[in-house]
Length: 147
Image (cartoon, rainbow, N blue to C red; front, side, top):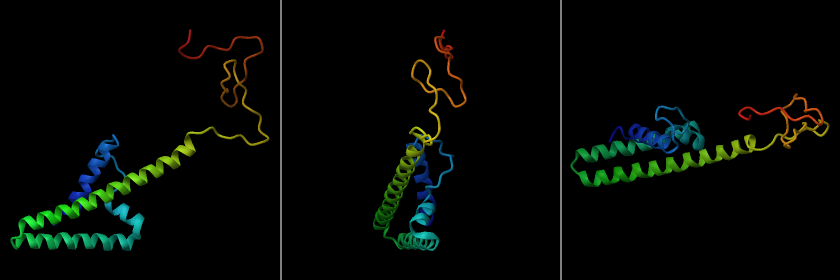
């Protein structure tokens, strides 16, 4: 029970990475201390981690005093709360990053008002910048993979 924080954090990291289809050894910034630091700052994160450690230490002492069932139930409740909160926060951060990344990567790049439009081939597909359009009346060059 004393080592509950690193055990919970490691378990959450493995579950989170498996849920996203990544290897469990991939690095990320979704560990418990990162989430707390983003939400509360460095001092707040340290104080919350100290409070959690004190709570689990008290549960460890209670376990040694003979209240096994009650202690295990309390430890399970605290660990579940930490797990659910961390997973929800991590999922929210991931959705925010995906939403921010989709706006930057997914759409077309607007041209400045004075820039000429990119020439299009006969299929109406814009040619890459610097490409020369096919001469009028000539068939366009075949694309790779076409005969």
